[in-house]
Image (cartoon, rainbow, N blue to C red; front, side, top):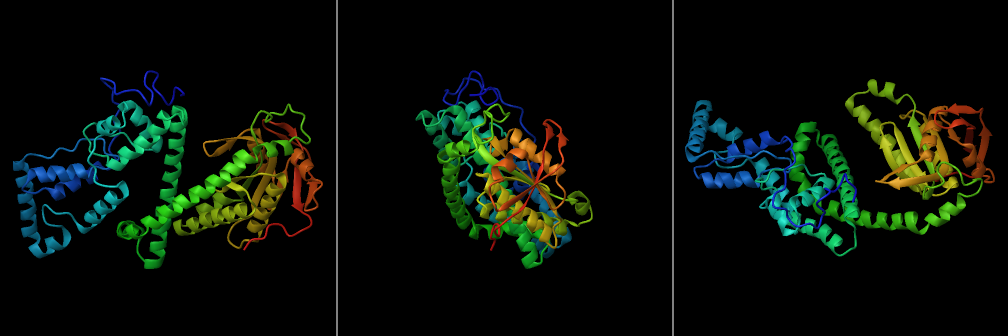
Length: 448
């Protein structure tokens, strides 16, 4: 495994060392929430309060929460009673739950947490690592790959499902199905992709509640806790379904047809190009909205959100219909790929036309290059990607540019018209010969 992922003396399968140095513990992002939760649950029985506090330690809590002795618990209860008497018992009951009980919101949040985590938090990090036969250092490598923050030795933050998940990935390494390096990489992919997916889904649900129920954003976020349980099973089912479909498509695209793609990219090449050693042949395209920065400055939050969503939705639809893949969206720009130069050209022309005809979105500059790339970490790399980005900056609003090599691959296809442009000196590439791509015969992509 690489040095950045694995300690030189400790691998995933090493036994628990006698002493493992703790990493610098991160500040607990939710420390104040934890302390509030403990205070609300203080009861005459200090042991019960301590148990509740341990059960509510969040993932990001790295600071020990200590329940004070019984005398302090009694003092806190007396203070709460005095406050209730001064404000009126009836008014206090309507605002603050009685001492030793949780509010309805916290009860709902705790129930949702236990459902999502598979049970109550009962295990500490060393217990989970030991249960998998790992050193704590090795277990933390996997947790970091999943995106979990550091926690303290005494924090009760894990459930039996966490134990099972750790065993699953470690068993794959022990069985020789994955190397340690591959296990870390696959785990990191799961963590990063699901993190972005969850944020996206929550924001979509909150926005829908604001629009449909007429509540504020803050109210919608609180209300989501009570409404999410009815959606969990359906969202999980769709996640697994989509993953299987995408895995099948990825196998076809990245394994079965990879050799054919390289063979089709040989025409017009001499074999000494900068991208020659790279393993995949792809049409790489960029679409960049014109004047997005100035437009965004004049928009309020709601209007800007609608513009961004409209842009990304339209891009995703066109790229999908064209048989391509949306690699990523960065602000006002989208990066996409396709398996053939013709497919890339169709997608590029459809994107350009869609933004030109859209009543809300501005026009776009689009560029596409057929070449070889490296696919890693869900992203793509190589000179082909860089050239496509440079050409995008050269394109006029509402036009599509390709390079001369891509133009040669398309020149016999009647669906496209190619118009040479004056040579340009491009940073990192020297003199290149851009070609404007226009629609020829046919109707292009057909969108529903």
